[in-house]
Length: 561
Image (cartoon, rainbow, N blue to C red; front, top):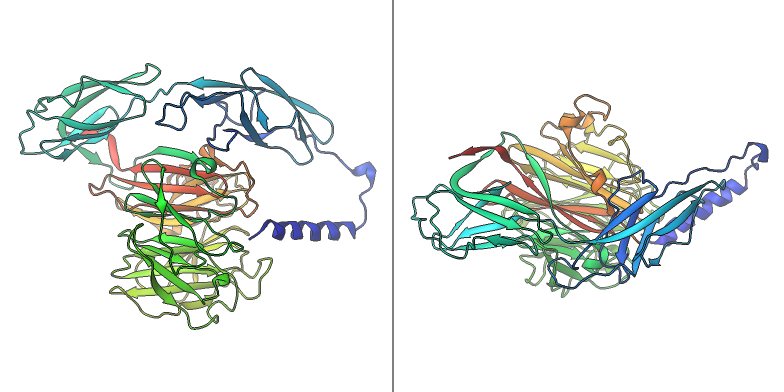
């Protein structure tokens, strides 16, 4: 989708309005809206992304905290003399002086003027802050080769019969923190050992290392922890190019593509830090638009109609592998020459049994030439049942972006269908494609402009959907417990809402310094960790960046000695 789509739509609306009777000036009311939202500062080169310490609605005085060093983990000192400010303003309101590159070595006052002339003053300050993080992130007994589990201020050594009386440790702390005594010096861990971690700003945290076992909650996750957040500039994103993300092993996979750029570029990043790690081999895989990953880390990518090679799927066994053509339709009939490939999902193991699903643009799309279709490929014992996907018209129409998400590895397993505009989320019978349940409308008490992404995952005896809530200027992630699929009909006004809407990311939104008028995003989930205690979600907001969240099913109030 291009900006021109929306410009064309806006011009059409203007022409329609101009053809109608003019409003009597005695009844014309100018807006008095004068509250800005989603204020953000980046460095002049576009890296970083820092929100004010104060929550919306913003008070008159705002403080933006800038880290002492940037990027995180480096020793490059920051300055506040060239910060690029952006914010969302009410329609027809304007800011004076205008936002842009600003010297915030001292507070600056701005005036927001509403359409009716009312004014709101904002005084914005920037302060450099040293890190207050004093966290043990990893702790491993070297000689016994035992990886420990960190829960709050406790480091748990899983039960073992090995001698742990003389162990050195490999450990990882939050950036700029120090630890005492030194775990690299051998200690006796048959009895509890206490460590003190000191953050860059002097904040301290005491940890006790002892033998035991964490306790799981009986259902789902118990906590959500943000691992990291990187803005579009930090990740090298290009406007409108990054609409998809997948996970393979230790890496995140992100295509850099859209329908008006030829060829394919797919980059991969260290998923623990977000650091760029390399470019994938895309030889012979032209026009890759979206990617997804299976339970074993295999990557599947779909081309788009401008690749001119019919509907193709490609498979990579890892981020360093060469692509293999997985499927190629014999003609355009499965998509009726309509645009396709904006969304892709897979459930199962591509080397075993799996279901792959994609969608075409919908009947409500600006350039639609055919109905909204859902595409489904079935993999049995590592082989596709058919090179050409099962293709059917979904009974409810959508615009450009919709995503079909399977919940099982068999062709008849049910699936979710999420539409961006208009917003609807359906749970669908995989055998006959009849709608079983729909998310209540509105699916959130206060929504942005669209729901462009849904990801289904299972964790600790529970089933979830992670859903993106996105506007042109910001996006947030929400998680819903769909262990009982009929719960998706629960309304935000219901007393049961809190047990259904189990994670609200509204206040942890990702800002888009360059507005994303296509309103796109994606969410990728890792497999559950080997010990069964954690898994990670990655929320990508186009033009904005990525947030990484760790879900844990450890009961933080329980511990077995």
